[in-house]
Length: 99
Image (cartoon, rainbow, N blue to C red; front, side, top):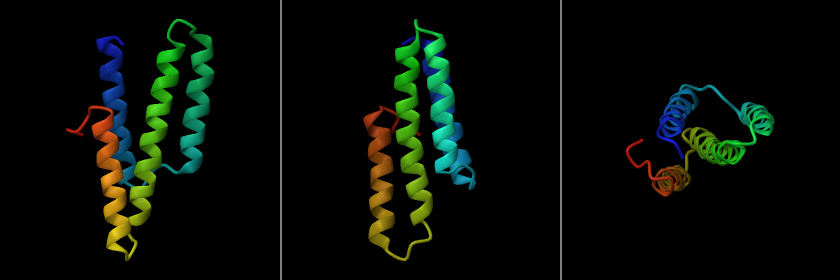
């Protein structure tokens, strides 16, 4: 993966985190985002695998962020802690603990 694409990926991850934290985004947004980028990937066969990997990464992040946002109003501390751990593990698994 090129350094420029990695920078782009990091920037999108950071922005998505802030947007979802700010109350924006939902399941429909995630599906639309995935659909648009996968359609785009088919037009660029040279980097389509990179784009598909990126889409899977972002989709996984959005799922975790939306779950996290949903449980922040939950009375159960266990549910909140579980979502927090899932999100932190996701960042660790993609080598972005600093985010």
